[in-house]
Amino acid sequence: MKVLRLGLTAAAFTLGASADVASRPPAFSSHQTELGSTGLQRNQAEDDYWLASQFAEGLTVERDYSAAARFYRKAAAAGFAPAQYQLGRMYEDGNGVECDLTRAAAWFRKAANQGDPEAQNDLGALYATGRGVPQDDGEAVRWYRLAAEQKDPEATSNLGMMYFKGRGVAMDLTQALLLFRRAAEQGYAGAQNNLALMYANGQGVNQDFICAYAWLDIAAAQNPRFTELREQVAEEMTPDEIKRARDWSIKKREEIAHKGKESR
Image (cartoon, rainbow, N blue to C red; front, side, top):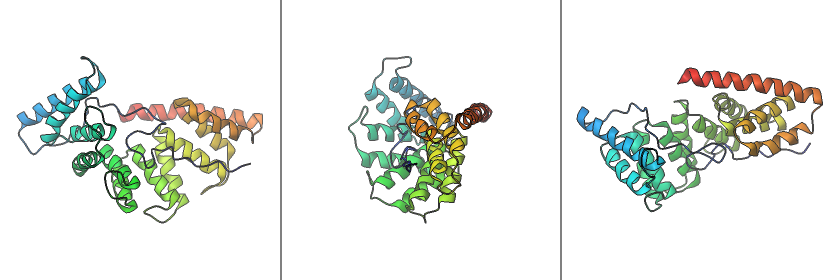
């Protein structure tokens, strides 16, 4: 069997959500970030953030990224971390404002310093790619790790990729496998794909096509672009092995879904 390439599908070295998952929406957040201000100011920041999300998503008003950026900026200036993160994303994507990765990094950093895991992950991605900040694998690992410690699945998978590649840390396939598995169990499709490919290639673990197929099947249920790799693995399997893998995949999907409901 040809070695299946471990793709950078776990948002590795990219900002925000990767191509294998839906974009993180700028909807109203449940973050409990404390502001160094009065309760009245906090309530105003939350109101501005909520209004920004309506404009960004086109929920109760017509979609207007410029208006969204304006209200995110108000809330961000008041120190509301979720707004700082979303404003950073608008600068990164060029939605409602001119694309400016330096400003994106600055806003991500403000939110990251308040402990926002999504901002920590995305700041890490900027350092990994050298976009808006000097390229620095050590800093990328540091921010990924902080977010992963808060159980952010994207950051956990990104950290796994750094161990897999030996970037900013010593190469450690066992640790990469552990991190991919942790994010995969949280339902992150990119990590499910990378975990599957480590099983398929016998990297950091004994080669196991049943496990590889099952995890790719789980990932493909979220995004059909993983179907092709799953079928490549199937070529190495017997019909009985494929059936066993599919049965395991169904049970694991149910388990992941149940855990997801419990964590809400």
